[in-house]
Image 1 (cartoon, rainbow, N blue to C red):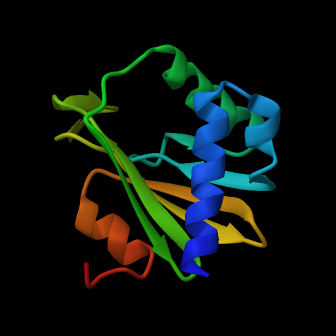
Image 2: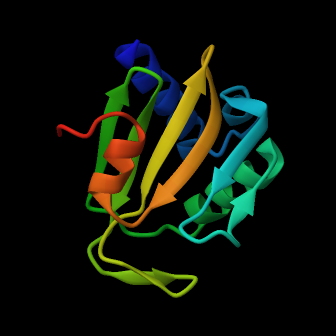
Length: 128
């Protein structure tokens, strides 16, 4: 199951990399919820999620590395940046960690964390 979940995330990210919104949408559940690092940041549809990922892709933000961990019911991924930045008043030291839940090959929920340990615990990967 972990491998399948990694492949879902990789497929989604590859579609975003190619700026193929239609292909990326196939990886998102129609009722997806993406909760940002603060309660006010929330997306409730594939269109909203894709809009942000595709816009960020267009910004050509510098990244140092991609971190990806498979879990039994999802995965955690993060793009590491060379500098800290801020999102809605939350200081991000280098990466936002996206804990994703996956059901039947589709991402059903994304929850963002500024802290790696919290994200891994949310995905059931507390021992890493």
